[in-house]
Image 1 (tube, rainbow, N blue to C red):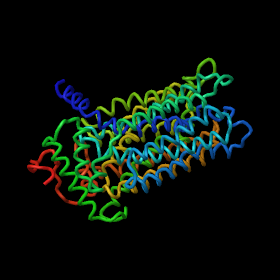
Image 2 (image 1 turned 90 degrees about the vertical axis):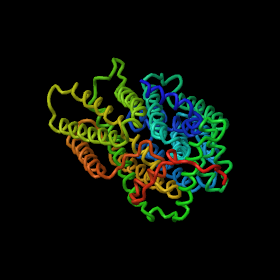
Image 3 (image 1 turned 30 degrees about the horizontal axis):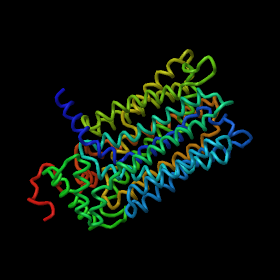
Length: 479
């Protein structure tokens, strides 16, 4: 109990670090409402899609990921040239404009597609920036918990969208218009919080040779009134890391970066395999227990609720139990459950309807333990600071491309195609199992390590790196 209270006190003391990321977090809350389209929650039946071909509607679905890839590229190109505050403000302008369009013209196909694209761009721009920002400003004991919370923000908004899709009366104020209202509220809060709380990362300031500002920021975000030995040691280690990284090139295929790039990309691919449009559509087709008397299918709402509650527990255990345990349990269990679902679909057993619900709920628990979360946390820890933006751009772009491919190939799938559904799910489960086996011996345990240590663990450079918090500092940090 004492250790738990100490951790809570430590977290409260270091709240300014999480506050510094609030601009990115509010953008993820808005973009999460668009990511909810990964479930078929009746969005195609709203008035914006009336009179338009299946191909055009599919393009609207894909537009978020296409624009998201452009946003990722923009972030990788500007993150070392602009301040984090400027990037968050730019993204907030996009989501504010898009939300306003949804409020006033949310029943028009072209406006919905443009709005979705604008939010997708903002998502990619802010997501990459938030991962890098968090890795460089968070204390090593809190980094995993805070970055894991990014997925909770996304899933909570997806949950909100699923709820609205089943409760809003279309004749009065459509779901998309309500999403625009909520988006405006989130955007306004994001602008306010970004202006008040956002701090530049010490690593970025060190790269610009602004050492006095870097130590000043560290004092502020650690909630101290003056330098402490702990802050001095962290500063020295970050400065050493920046100097080491400056001796390398920006080529993401050089200096031992290929290994972490492959590992993170495989984690991203695994996440898409476990959570994509085709898989979720098939799961909804075989779930009838959560359909109300009025005909509303609450399955997606139920699934997302279970996943989010599991993720809330996960963020508090990810630093205690480590990343690898969450990875192994989550990916292995998810792969097994998807394969079991595929076997059941192919065998067409009688009186197994309730069994589908059980498998689906267990699948959400398994995925909530680590799918997506671990990929984000490891993305923040795996790379050289110079190569990190481009490396995250490449791995996440592959994730988005895979989403686009799956939407394209499964968009017109209809109920009753059991052989196709079973083969798709079996291929997904087997692929996920293969990736899990490949990663099992390769992923390092990085909880409570500094980002200099985690970088070396992923590159396996053979260098022994000690955390700065355990070393004696020089008499003055400015010497």
